[in-house]
Length: 147
Picture (cartoon, rainbow, N blue to C red):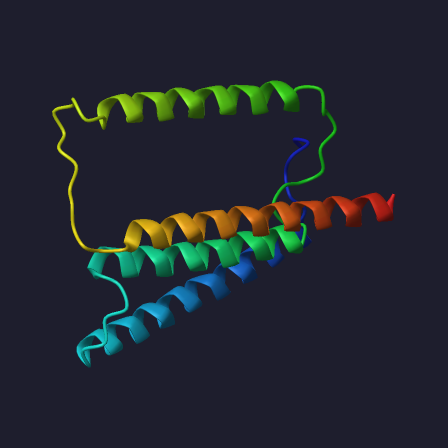
C-alpha cells in the first residue's frame, strides 16, 4: 500500500460527499435553467454555469478537507518543499507566458464587453482562497490536537 492512499472510511466519505456535490450541481443548474426561462438572468450565459460549477466544486473540496478525506496518511515529508517549489515555478512560468501572449502587442485581441463577470470571478477566487486557507489551518490544528 502506498503512503498516500485513503482508507475505506475515507473513500466512502469522499464518495458520499461527491454524490452530494453532484446532486447540488444538478439542482442548481435546473434552477438556473428555470429562472432563465422566466427571463431572470443573473449573469450572462457561460459565466452563470461556470460560477455554479465552481461553487459546487468548492463545496466538494471544502467538505472532503473538513472530513479528512482529501489525502491519506503521509510518511515522507522531506520532498514536500521541493514539490511546492516546482509547482510555484511552473505556475509562474505559465503566468508569464500567458501575460506575454495576451499583452497589448499580441495577435490575440482582447474581447471587450459590458459584462462584470471578470470582477465577480476575481472576488469569488479571493474568497475561495481565504476559505481554503482557513480550512487548512483548522485541519492542521485538529491533527495537531489529535497527536
